[in-house]
Length: 236
Ligand code: PGA
Image 1 (cartoon, rainbow, N blue to C red):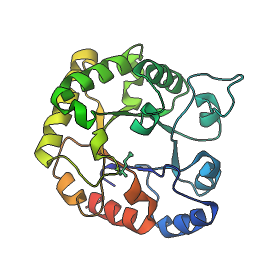
Image 2: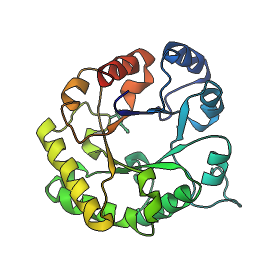
Image 3: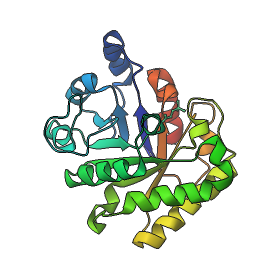
């Protein structure tokens, strides 16, 4: 695969769907394919040898935090990626400050961090300010040697689960802007992923954007056959 494909399966699967999903995907094993199922199914994916990401983590290592999973625990069972700051978590009250603590904690345990950033539809006119604020906050306290483990996933919040995506040219400009901002702060390039309504119909167009390192895919990744079609296009 030439690009990272990160499947955010959210809370879409049930037990009987998991084995069928893994059967259909079984011909593809690639370290750039990262599957992020619900926590309770993670062991099944690890057993099959997939690179696995967790959809959220705590900023703490250990302690009295009911319902939480720590980066220490996640890396301990072989999880290597974590999605942080997804808009569906931000909606539950996750602030940039909480997100920054989660990033620091995850990098400490050597997890690769997929940090979601992006503007709401009301914020479209101040998109650059929003992105710049989210990036600055995320980069606070990140050791330089860990930067290669940080992926910026640009996900316009209005494009998530809606079937509406920005014009290819607009994504290209935004990605360029993110790269410029990051360079100002850390003086080195970062990996940038696009997410928000990516599917088997628009992936060829999105592949025209050279600066994209990969895609974060929600609903279209829940159907293994659709995911395979996307992988096929990104592997050409
Ligand atoms: P979507 O979700 O592909 O269904 O828009 C993307 C995401 O939530 O990361």
